[in-house]
Length: 314
Length: 289
Image (cartoon, rainbow over all chains, first blue to last red; front, side, top):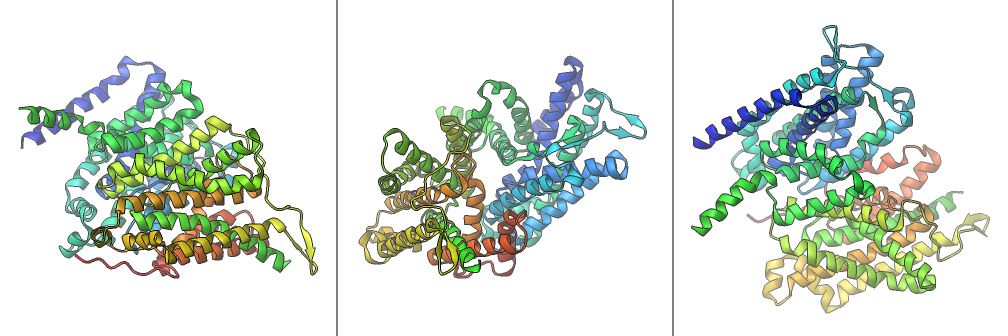
């Protein structure tokens, strides 16, 4: 029970910080804060698929792109309200999540990783070729978000919209992990055979996990498009998928706090590594290798590790 | 027209087959899907090109040297990156290979730049006239080299002590160890072999696609597709799958549509996994509990 109280305290502190943070930074700071939450949403979605489910996805940039483009196209060409488009962006991404997850059910092993890799490449190519809808190489313009006639011209107020959505999905993720479905998915990761013998169905669990994850990533992509105001295929490359994976590994694969921490990492990493330019990928790749070798639980596991060390010394 | 297409499809297919072989080899021996395979191969091809340019070595010699260089690279990666965490969950190993993929990719860009290089072809790439069809000697060369390598591999696995040990270790590591086979050594050897194979296949495809840091990303996806088509656990299956993919891709590009040729491999992966997940020659893995 003690750890539950500690978690609640941590969540309350994080919430407080998130609420007051915009007051202390300028417009660029608002933008960075919003980006942290948007990445955090993706990290939460990977937390479900990879952290709980033990399935790798190298294609989350694909779902991100589908969410972003769906939402932007619906807002600009159909004229639907912003929040509805965000939800629809998530829904379309979820449909693609279903399509990718279906074949993975037939086989054990890591075919899902290969299938998602293929999806990411195909999505990028389609965005490139389908010029009439997506603007192709030139990209497309996305208007500022609007809710009930109020236009969010600054990133500051928009940040609170994203915060509300992120809090909602954090709540969903935390509850998902505690639900029978989430526990079942975790059991499947640890031993597929033992879990299946205990009546945990593989099909249902992997499909729900993947659809939920794709939905959250799609929503994040939709929010992202409206934040930066312009979409181009360059924002959704394989590199982006890799940086997503790096983010959850650095934060901690199997912890909700770690996922959000990963969002902070990914928002600040490009700033810290601006000098490195093209060498950034070495850092991301190397980070993955080093964390897997020396800190597989990510940053979120550091307190636990220190406690373990202290206990061992005693 | 058709004959020329068939030959170039077969050449493309044998490159996919070689790369597919290297993926299956590592997967069989160490149960890891090596996502870095394509990039390691590209890196090896760059090393070969540098040797050719800076040391003025003839292309033929470089081809012969490429295999051992690739092997060394694979062995080092296995020893340093994979072996220390071989008992960790599967997921961790997979993440390490994904990390290596991007590290190699970016490192190559850093060392050799981002512009494509022209890579010389062993045989002339101008077409010659054979019975009224235009045939590329380079394509025939690729097919020939692939056949020689595959025959060598077949001999190695079926008729040498080391190869038999590798087959035994992949069937059942525990009993293989009881029989005195060093399973860790087998793992290292398969990484080495597959990396050597990869390097050669990258050097074969480089004259067609040009050599640059991004060249292997689509190629490796197709090698995956070919290997999955063949069942991902069978070496002949990987060869067959790669050849089928190369042929159908070339014919599709010529007769149907060139723009979405790339998407074909992905659709094939999905279709095969939906309809017949064990592939053409794969066997269903049975697990004792």
